[in-house]
Amino acid sequence: MLKTHGIFYLENRANLLEIQNTNTNDVIKILGQPHSKSMKEENTWIYIERTRTRGKMLKLGRNVLLNNNVLVLKFNDYGILDEKIFYDKTKMNEYKFAEAKTENAVKKGSFLQSFLTSLRNKMYSNVGKR
Image (cartoon, rainbow, N blue to C red; front, side):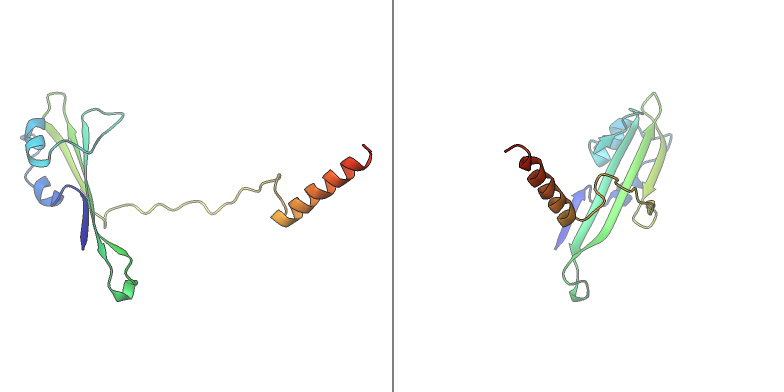
């Protein structure tokens, strides 16, 4: 069972768009309204296609990503297509996160240790109040 989010056959439709020849109205006819527009550049439109399916027994039935395509279109001030960038799942960057860990001085022991310390402090604070 295929589950698709976004525009079907995005790569084929992107091939219909010609740089310096296609305008925003043509793009809307071919692809529809953009999924997103850049916050910094209003003339940058983003379209996506994501297709997943159920895995075979080897994957234990987990979802398998078939397509993860992103099309970025940049228009000039007159609405003519200046740049077309197509990303598929093989061209996506893999981000590596830092391995460094920050020590938390407030919570240096285990939960049990901090709970027992808190309990002991409460017991001894009530001794002098009687």
